[in-house]
Length: 197
Image (cartoon, rainbow, N blue to C red; front, side):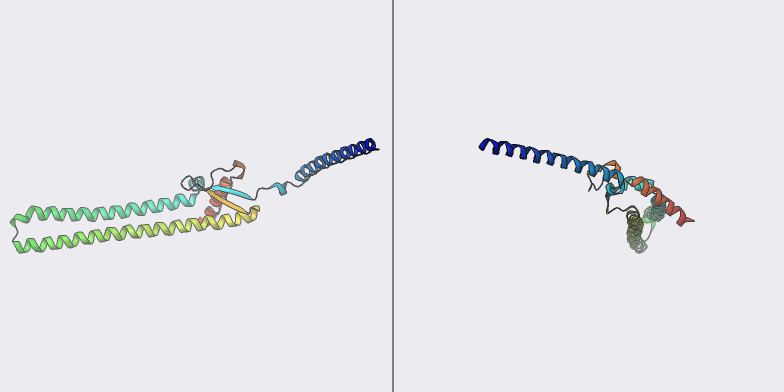
């Protein structure tokens, strides 16, 4: 009787094991069939945008950079010409200082000192104004991209859009299939071209 119970137990265990293996294989087959039948269920919900590439391709950023470069160049030229005019006045004073009466020399030196302070103040104000304008433009750029990506993510069904940049590498690796930079850049440029008209 013991031998019969032992054989029965072995057979039962064998049947259970075979049934378990068959069930596992069926689940894998069913998962593959479901994935093939509904590819949207496999869609990635997390993607990333390479901000370095995006900015290199985004026409608005290029236009903005050009505007800022032109303003910086104009401000530098203006400050430079004022500085040169001041240097000419100083050179003129130094040339004539020996022939000037002491009181006139003192008045001229005081005037030149005030002009130098004014020039330094003007230069500091010009620099601060440019930095404020640059910060404002960068804020507009960020808002444009963030607003666009928000709508883009909703349209595509993405739950999270990360950004990657060599300067600020929060994403160390991303599968190239998750990189949506090219599509985002194209659509941003299309929207900007429409806004420009």
